[in-house]
Length: 154
Image (cartoon, rainbow, N blue to C red; front, side, top):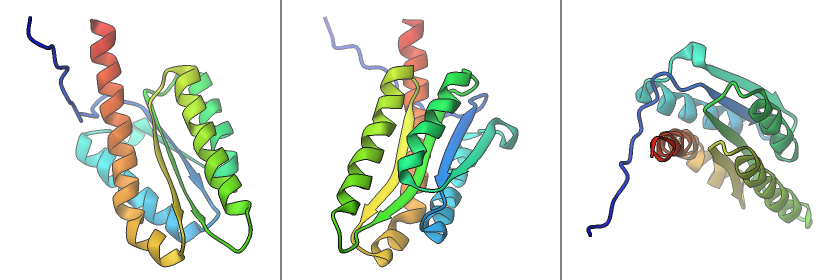
């Protein structure tokens, strides 16, 4: 029997997407958001189906994602922010705990969450990645939402 391969789909028409954007490193967050919105637009997600919420920083992002997920109003979520390495251990805590929290929301609620929280050594690294990583996070969320739909239709 041949292997059954499920289709890869990046269509976004009729999908409702929630975005949580960190305000810490705001310029980078804005660049991430621009990339994410570009991806959603190219996928056909209507502007009125996109909701953006901002939070102070990456550690607050999972709670806002969880609140979005609890409403049942969204098909996919996107987390955007930037954690830039400093001189203390705080970088590792924020990077690790925000990633863990984002993953927990996806698994707890069965909703795709594109993780666009950058963890970079410098502002320059984050600035160089922001548009593309915002785009990729939104694209990943859409793709997984479509995959879950296909799996659910069995």
